[in-house]
Image (tube, rainbow, N blue to C red; front, top):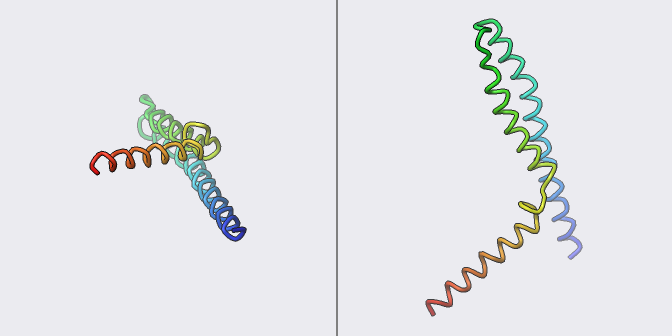
Length: 100
């Protein structure tokens, strides 16, 4: 049983590292691309500052990505997953009993 717990802990740690890696990659590309878009906007037509649209849009996505990586609260955490699984299993059980 201890081997299973170690495997599960390893899997969870690896999953968390992959999530962090994805988030940091997203931040890095945001930091690199947005100034480039500002530069393109400046060089082409500075009267209309369109760079705000991708900056805010991507920023909102980045915020939700950060929340999903660093804050897995009561809404979508392990406890929520467990409750939903039990709910779906009970629904299946009740549906299968109806037709017996």
